[in-house]
Image 1: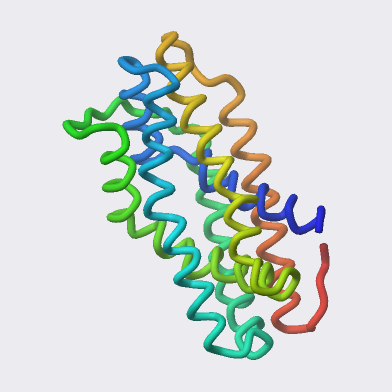
Image 2: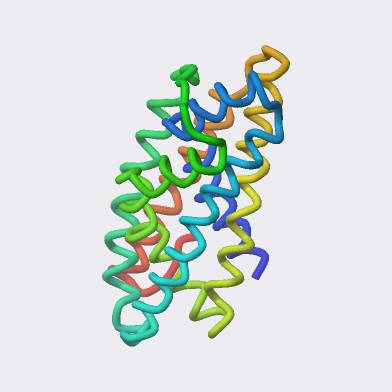
Length: 202
């Protein structure tokens, strides 16, 4: 169980910490509202993300998990390799201050619901994690995955907003992202190995 939680944290963190529209706008919101602004953005993000996780879990429950696990691992593994590379490449990017005319929570909803990379992530990499969680924890698998993942968004977005409210840069962001990118690539290789050889490297 601990191994799976660590895997979820490592893979989820690579997505949450990567520079993107949600992080950038959260940084801008933080200059006015502090960490509370980031927390509100996280709530909006959660409003979209939670139903999506349960929807994917429902789709997986219709099919036999064992039959879709290897195809999911293959697709998820390929996306993890790509995502890991993009995470490392984007590590040097700075958070750009982008403005939002909406409330922080509504901003979180909009930038999550209309982010194609977010949807692709959950239907590929996330889908593999959900399937694995269902195999490990049964009907509570999706709920277990949700709680293993969601706190990272709240902590990170609140932290971004807090540090930008103090006009500070988030230190060590590049190093953290590079390390996470490497871990994501390793998990991608592990998924691909499982898809072809029915066993794990990690």
